[in-house]
Amino acid sequence: MAKAGAGVGRGYSVTSFYERQFLPRLIGCACGAKPIRRQRAKIVPRVRGRVLELGVGGGLNLAFYDPDRVDSVTGVDPSESLRYLAEDAPRPAGLTVEIVAGRA
Image (cartoon, rainbow, N blue to C red):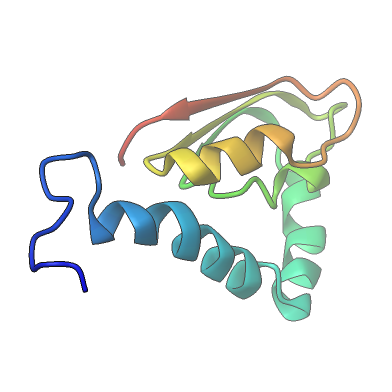
């Protein structure tokens, strides 16, 4: 059995495990639900210009941007795990996307 505080000071914490493993899946399930996807499909394609998406998460909106209307998308998120998902998220050809670390 692990002692209380085992791993502390060695780069391990419950928070980092939660942020790396649990949070991305929870956000993906909650934000990827069918009713929310339908709303994304209605709203996101209407955006135009340069887009700053605070809390880009796993990049679920990226697939809906119209590259003929959007010059570029900069997605900001504090979660490294979610930024990795956003980097690999589907998007239309020709859409310029930059994913960066940051907090709003």
